[in-house]
Amino acid sequence: MTVGTLSQQPELSDVPKLPKFTNLDSFKLYLSCKTFDQYEAKVLSHLSFFPESDGEKKAQIINTPIDKKGNYIHEFCVENVKTASLAKDKIVDVVLVHGYGASLAFFVENFDGLTDNKRIRLHAIDMLGFSGSSKPPLPDSDHTSASDIMKVEDYFIDSIEKWRKEKGLSHFVLMGHSLGGYLTSCYYLKYGKDVVDKLVLISPVGLERNDFSLIGGYSRTEKALAKNKTVSLSEETEILNREAPKISREVTQSREETLATSGNGSGAGATSDSGSDLESNYSADNVSVFSENNDPDYVRVKMDQKRRLGVNSFLTYLWEKNFSPFSILRISGPFAPKLISRWSFNRFGSIEDSNKLLDLHNFSYKAFIGKASGEYAITKLLAPGVLPRLPLLDRMPKKMTVPSLWLYGENDWMSKRSGRRMVREINEENPLNDPNLAKFRLVERAGHHLYLDNVSEFNRLVTKFIL
Image (cartoon, rainbow, N blue to C red; front, side, top):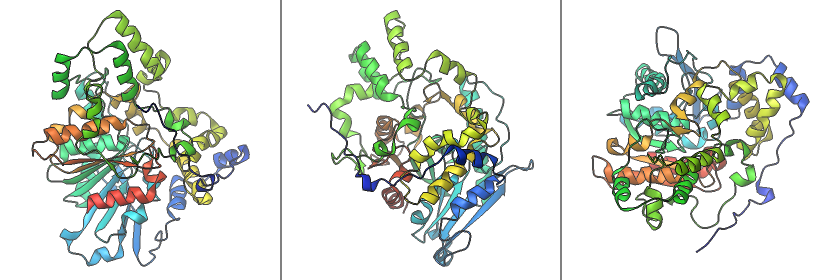
């Protein structure tokens, strides 16, 4: 049995050299009088077809009103100029939703490639409460019942539905990254019938069954396993260690680690449509992280495991008090841009154009310190350790009737195993009895932000699935 393999690190020449960002630069950015719109336009202007068309593609920024209170959804719409010549039923509208604290501008590297095919018209939107969209307050709700959580989900997904109606989109392909993946899944469950043609989930959060779940159920296979197998404390600890997303890696994972590859042939395009690749570890894969075991030794080990996952009492306290990580940036004043640079240079570090990288960093700072609104949803939707209070694994498999693609980076900190499990359960339990309804793919040399880390492979897989 192979204990482990060393990842193949990218050649130094393959990793773009990072620009310098000094304390002086941090102060200058803090003192800048430029608006969010100006920083966004600066990022998008790196596209050859914005603000003016290049003759092949065209793009525009649109703010679509969604209610009488003046709230609106901010959108960047991109299409091939040849799209206008197509019959309406030949055009594929694709709606793209960003992740937590992010923005449509984070997909600047993908807009060109995803619209190379003249059939695709792309609508990248900012979720209500984030970036360029309106920021009304979240509903006043707790997180102790399913109805509480759904009120927060509805804040986002109802606004998408209002936007869809205002745009006159009768149906579309829906894509979402991270928290956007969770919320687009929720949109499908509530509004998707006859509206969503296909789903693309990009390293989505919110899949895992877990101890914080307000559903707390077992799947059919887990019930069968529970009858015949006693799970030891060490096995339960191993499962917890494997299942929980390693969110700290969002900040600590270096560019070199993100762009590394295992070299074992399981990278780009690797499939797991049936979950058969997990059968050798069937028992471990099918035991839920949810348990009703109240044995003192079990509880002690479980709490120790939670501490190792970063869910200690202090962080739990902050989480339950609805503390936003962006609050730290807002009180950091002129030091905030420098603090953000560690994250932004790692996440956008695969971009070779240093000016574009700096523009994305500057834009990120402006987006992160903006008016607080949607960011507070994360502690309501997710429990400490970013584990879902209403796991999608207990909500989606039996209700899926459209094709779905589940994409993860090879070095993703999000739980790839939960993605594989989702694909398997959809293919086993969907009402159409279609064993190939859901597909799983890994993108090589990529992490959680796989759309940035390996742009060409991400665009290829998505386009192939959509058309």
